Image 1 (cartoon, rainbow, N blue to C red):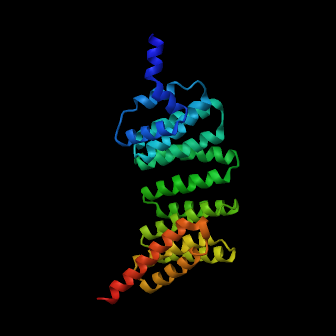
Image 2 (cartoon, one colour):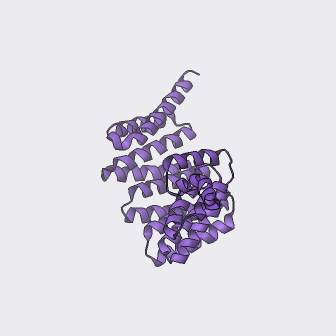
Amino acid sequence: MAMASMASASMASVALLAGDAAARARAHVALSAGASLEEVEEARHLAEDVQTEQAFLSWLASSLRSCRRYGDALRYTKRQMELWRQEEDLGEMAKSLCEIAELCITLDQVEEATEAGKTAESIFKRLKDSKGEARVLLEVVSKVEMLKGEADVAHLAAKQASILYQREGMTSGECKALKVLSEQHVSAGEHEEALQVLGEAAVRFRKCNEQIPLAEMLIAAVAVHLDVGRLSQARKAADTALGVCRQLGPSGQRQLASGLCASARAHLADRDVRSW
């Protein structure tokens, strides 16, 4: 009787652990509303092997991050990291350490973020994982150094990340690193340097016929031009970006939306100035 009652009480947890879409959607809504972790904890303890628990923790940590429950997400990500350590899976352990560092940065836990990042970087270098090294440089080192007020060190980290991504042929990672670098320059009031980064990258992407990263660079340049009141340059960059985006097809819908927004901002700003 007791076992039947326990089974009945755990039905929701069993469905949650099994990956039932409806159960996880309900749990996500509850977590967003600030619900306790009792049900998810019960589900986690039902896991009979490491693989099942890892899969569940991956969903849970991601869900908690999207709910902005970063402290809870950090706790479960640390549990993931410990499981990978027990399994002696260095690659996955380093990835978890990156996630821990990123969450610590969000929570302003700079020292813990630095330590997690250093450990992750050491493992990635040992594994000769350039993509992992680039992630640490971009998502941990550059952000930590900006928080510490060391803009030059942050710039160098982002630049090194872009180089590593380029060597690996990962244009999406390279593009992200270059945008981070340009944003760092803007935050330091170095708009010319930001435009130089974006301009040089745009030229290279155009030569390589890399249309999506080209569009990303042009769209980022619009924001920089508008920031310093260069409306004609902003409008020109926006129109060029929009032209590129319209040729991307279904794979470039996100860039097209961003291009439309950038074009609208540039033309509205120009119209407002003309109406003064």
